[in-house]
Image 1 (spheres, rainbow, N blue to C red):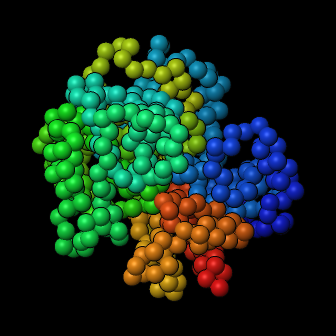
Image 2 (cartoon, helix red, strand yellow; image 1 turned 180 degrees about the vertical axis):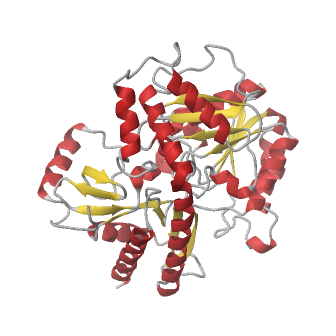
Image 3 (cartoon, rainbow, N blue to C red; image 1 turned 120 degrees about the vertical axis):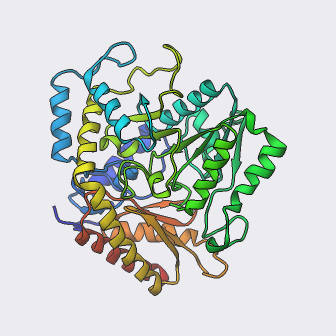
Length: 441
């Protein structure tokens, strides 16, 4: 398929009919930004039900890591599905889950023996990490960061703080959770410049939260995204993660990295935390781990994941078909796609920074690999957030055959399949250029 190729007004007649049916029977809580109705996809190209073809720089919210329906992943799914679909790794054994556990013991971003718990999603992977931290340490408190997103089930929702709407109506939140400042250098919470700071954004955690709200010896875990996802694709300075690791070690607190969106090769390394030279105690992944099949993985130091049978389990977690898809995905990542993400991502960031010189709306371009954020502002000095303009640009891209999504209040996220090539990256930048010009005018 070639993209973009728009044949009808958007949405087309078939898409309109499906959207109308959807409105009658599907929960209205889903956040649909524009009327794209998927029919099929190959690589980084998707086609809607009316035959319109789009370049996909959303990847199902950073999920389709190997591209749409990669033949190696499809072959692994079919092969496993023909053997058995389910046997519940909670009560029985099967090799695909064992092989995946061995794979994560090899690739997880910290040294020493490791064990993995398998679930179905990112929020479940975080829930497992919360329970594990509390069980392992015997403590009750958890620390998260403002702007974070860790899921929507009640435990992970207590950590989430990217948008008030995600928490509204579900209170009171789980107790013992406190939020600190994240290392957002474009909008430094303490008004410093990256070159002059020593991660003073963490002073609030050390000198306020740990002094006035909860004693550090009562904190089980700190949950942090190495690069914030829903908060705006925010990339902190390495010193932020280094100081955080020092604080957690000082007080015997487990450091849990949420790599649900940033992990599995997206940033040009298997895990985003590897860019910062820090080793966590626990890592949680999902999204791109199985190229679109439901799977969550919580991997921890073996001495931490030392809970007895019955402490935590999942009927469907570690489904054998999902495990097979994940094993094929990891092989593709290792063979070529991590390298491709690093190279094409660097190329795309350079091209987007050229656009920044052209369009005053672009306040910041940041990212690693193919996890790229574009923050839009009405004024580069005051950094007033260009919220409505962001939404207009996302829609303008859609109408020109490019799928992107917002992140935070005023950023655009670029999170394509890791199979994206340079020509496709250049096309995406050209469409963004047109959309920015159209909104400006």
